[in-house]
Length: 71
View 1 (cartoon, rainbow, N blue to C red):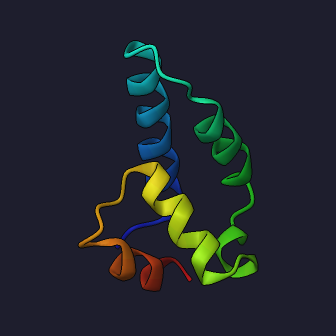
View 2: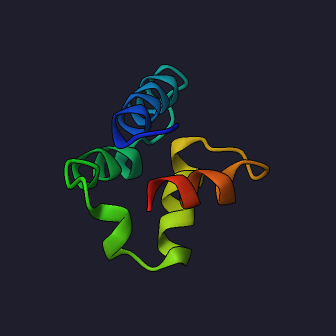
């Protein structure tokens, strides 16, 4: 089962990846701060939550499944 800590690890890996490629990681750094709130996904609309999950690196095939598990 996926947990917030798993999402934090994935997001941190995405930040490292983007930085190594010289891409802007600002959005994922903001997401890192947002993930400190363990109830984040219960406060967001589903659309916003799915955008964050996609930015973290969750594939389109798994995004609905992951969303359902974390709310």
